[in-house]
Length: 152
Image 1 (cartoon, helix red, strand yellow):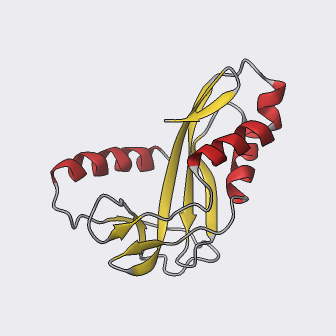
Image 2 (cartoon, rainbow, N blue to C red):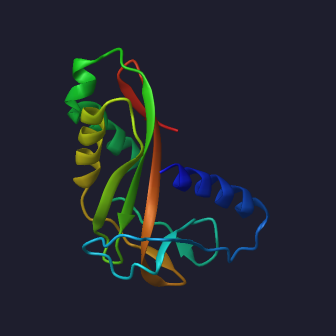
Image 3 (cartoon, rainbow, N blue to C red):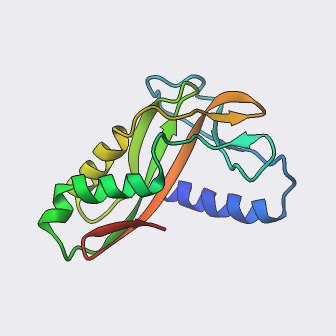
């Protein structure tokens, strides 16, 4: 879990100095139902040539609206403060095949409710590497202040 966060920071730093063809491949050890090729899962960055991140069917603003309106835990705890990160794996067909809190909040129930919202966002546009649809990962970091979620 922390490894993904460290990997993201390293990739970001390398990305500042690397050539445009830098590609980050994830190591997937478990079997994930629906994965197209567990040896070819990428963390894609649209700022690099030939890479296109998987695209959610709704905007980040709409994701936030859904999180803040559908999560009962936040309605029940209006002064709640926390932070976290959720990781998704989207397969080459645009299906979310894994959705799991990467940096958990202090509440298992809140984590479960956040995962439920992300699992119901709909069909994504698959990530692409050099024009070919590939399995890819997306991370969403968030903060919660006064019971309201915002993305970092």
